[in-house]
Length: 303
Length: 226
Image 1 (cartoon, helix red, strand yellow):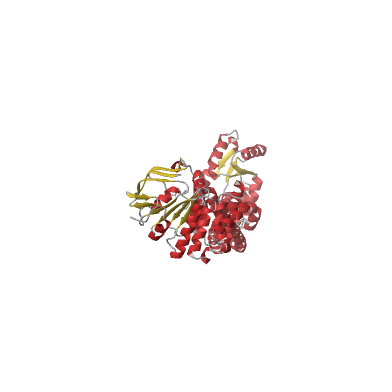
Image 2: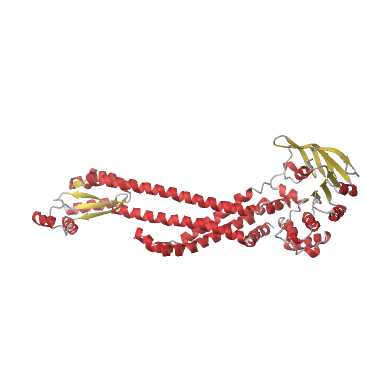
């Protein structure tokens, strides 16, 4: 008998949903709009994140070796650095590689090229280090300086040149991230409130029905069930519609997205993450709908 | 069967709705509760179906104090009491049949059982032919009969009617009262709250008169007097 009541509750919810055609459409439209806004904020934050990572990847620190060192020893150190925590990449540049790079960089500057010819190769071999965590440069350099390899090193460009720039970049990145979190939270809160409110208004129509159900001795869960089902249906349809609308929206705004963040491939990202995106969207829509109905109907359900 | 023992209901702000009510109603009785508007008739009935709780006192139903019922027991208690109101409280988007079957659905009865019972009860209230109509297509008297059918369909021990004829004309009023008397004859205890003097005088059964929240008269075969 319990199952019978359960199925009846679900059937009643589905019936209500279709019986209130226009009201359902209005409620869904509002939820679709809020979900759409959330999606947009999500994409924007994705672009921001990608751009910030791009900038972070450009940061590196070079450790210069003394000119006359044993290259094998230097390569050994590079291997050790690569194994240290937080290191993204450590790359060895020999004297010759450094020269080629330098010549390329200044290929249009005759004075420099000419003076190089006279000097021979004054450049030192070096290791360029990129960290996953930009806060960790100082630590790793201290580690290297304290290690058995310290005698190989002549100088580090961190303290004199790069430290202030890296620190400033780090601050900017951190601030942007913080602002991003705040904006996403605000929009999420707005979406939740708007969804909740529109479902609450819909449920206002059912106060009479709830009153009568109570009167004829329905138990509270049987009263709630149809409304929860209805709320879930709102979330379910709204999630699908917003996904369906969002896909072409991304597709057509792709050129302008790529002009901001050339590395980002939004369509591929969506394809790769399709299951996750749909699951999150449907899951949050359905759960939000159910909870909103539950809270909204409570008001009329004082047993 | 029903006993109100020293029951008082005081709303916030010291508004006294009921004052020290003592009332004993036997199974199978037909009791009219009379009094002017605002004397506590509705409050008395609302206490019986646990829509509200008394401030003090006991309300016994078949030797159990209903005030002590748990949340789970409240719906079960309400299924033992059918309720009818002045404004019918029908669902306009459901047919007559659905309005009545609703009461059995919530009790978890099987579909076959529901069909049988609803047809039978619509027969009793004389609405078999309007089973597929919607409440808005019916007259006031017919709507009230649907409400009575809904209240009776799970065979309650008590039928509580709160001003059931308040919105009806003379003829319809008397039809409803006759229906209530017939239901009472079939064994259901009936509690009727009304301020309609003619009705009470013609019923000629027990009358409990309330004034300012107190019982001022309780007569076995009473007339409407205040």
